Amino acid sequence: MSRYMSRRSFAARGRLGEPGKPWRRGGGRRSKRAEPLSGKKMRVRVVPVGEKLRGNKIAVVPEFSPRSLDRHFLLLQSFDERAVMNHSSELRTVENEKSTLSRFLRQGRAWMLAIPLALPLVASPVMAAEEPAAGEATDTEEAAPQPKHVDWMTDLAAAQKLAKKENKNLILFFTGSDWCGYCVKLEKAVLTQPGTAERFDENFIPVVLDFPNRKQLPAETKLQNNEMKQKLSVSGFPTLVFADADLMPQGQIRGYRPADAFWKQYDEIVAAGETIAAAKDGAAVADITDYKQLNAILEAVPEDLLEKGWLETMRRAADASKGLDDAVSQKWGDKVAEIEVAIAERKFGNDLVQGMVKTQREAKSPAEVIAYFDEAADGAADYPKRIVMIKFLKMRYCAEQKMYDEGIVIADVILASDAAGEREKLITSQIKNQMVQRKEAKEKAAAEEEAEQ
Figure 1 (cartoon, one colour):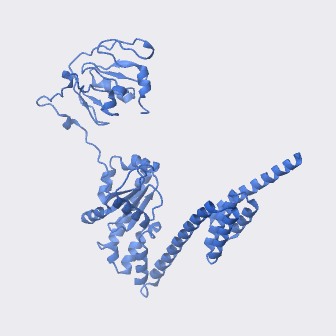
Figure 2 (cartoon, helix red, strand yellow):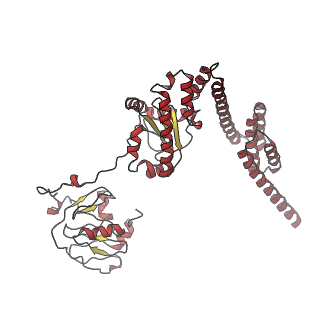
Figure 3 (tube, one colour):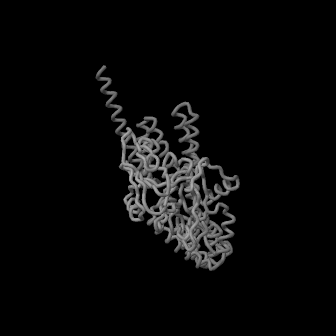
């Protein structure tokens, strides 16, 4: 309602009186008499937002329910007298000319137009719908075509069957429809815009996998959505995953993107999908045994998606090329090992954080939490990256508990480790500097307090 007057401000500005009589607004001041309009009657109808005006007809945009019309709208008394309340609180009569009305709408000065509704206890000739005269254009003929919206499916199995039948791929839209602000923003900026549905229909069957907080989903839909979220390692919303009918991912768009950036990335994903489809040559990936064909397919898959559904294909490519093309075999064998290590490290990190939270909740002293970190480090002695992860969490805990001496020592160990990446070292350096400053401030405050005593 930001563009329109609120319920309170409209009540303060007054209401339209009876036809041809003075009207009052806040403070009891008289205003201009609403003079009857001359000329023939106008037909009035309610139309969707943005419909083009034709002839002398008024387009009324229904922003509120009819039940609240008497509170929010100026009630017009007849087809012969129409008024517009603008933002400067003037009541103006609008002549029976399309140019006058169009000028008000273009300038944004018109607040809202309304038409008289049928009242249950009062009979009036205005209430009856007017039939078009013979040869006169009907409302249906004049109505502008409505933009096509994306027809999201929710049944993934049905969408897969349809994709195979129509030789298309899938768009999987992971969203939190009733709580995720960036999901709503992406829908408004891109997904509900004119032309989006047509572009999707060229290559894809769209499927929405919703994770709402308040809305209840059927149990089978909720299970399906959770399984796909885990299978495709979706960690945030909104995420659009582009996959073939067998759910082999070919691209993804993570997070909010403005329209230009979205469609640029979309075109890149479509191009990658076409390359993959050409390499598949009509066969399902699971049925392909030729290592050259498998290698061509894997080469077209974005690297960040290889661990999301393509691990088994990489293993098959590595095995099928042994003794035939050792370079291909080693390439995909090494990639499988690299991804498996990354997955194991992420799992270790998640388990470590969950254990730390539980220990902090149940521990009676900081010493018990420190003991948890030391025990975890003993079990990860053969994994340098895990040691860095443990020490990083331990350092942060020491900083939170104002154990600055211990935290600074741990920070120096991390900064000297070859297993720590640039990002870990950068954050560690920042935390160390904060601890040094706070330690100095604490010592200075203690010295001043001692001097005062």
